[in-house]
Length: 83
Image 1: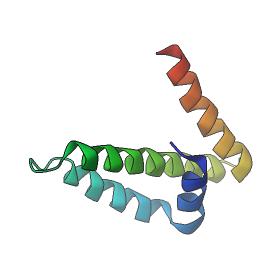
Image 2: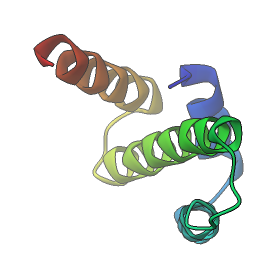
Image 3: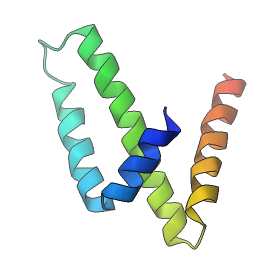
Image 4: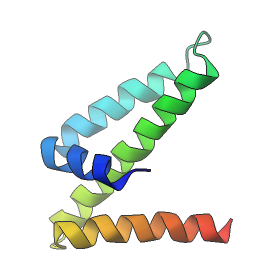
């Protein structure tokens, strides 16, 4: 997860575009010929896109962009700390 990338995805793409991209990337991971390195890269992209989608949802509920980004980061870090 990289907050600057999530911010960039959020600012430059609609929720609909991010959802479509997410569908394509998830489909890509199902191919048998995908290497572990490719899966790692795509997995990171999926994580960042999901973060941008969460930010879109939070902003749509009235939260400022900065708070939405920080809130998402805190939620992820909190789940890592619990693991």
